[in-house]
Image (tube, rainbow, N blue to C red; front, side):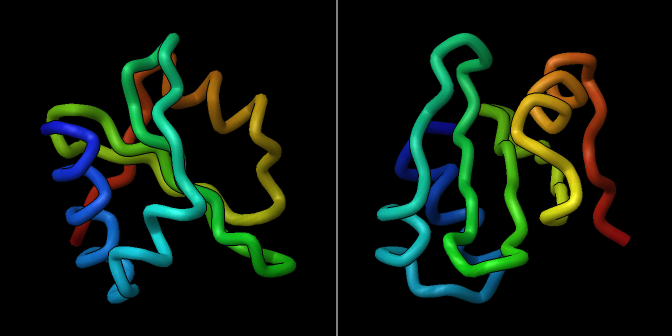
Length: 79
């Protein structure tokens, strides 16, 4: 997935306007993954890999731990 496809995927998953997702995300070069963080207090965050897999974290999980978990290969399953 390209960055544009990752943004579109996440916008669809979260049922948000694509432009809202785009303004609050960026690619983390070390991972080659898109990182999105909801700017609202208590907001959720996501890493989206180029293959479409992702890892969700709520606000209790800091960026560093979220980053490490994603790097270790942990992913969120959609049920």
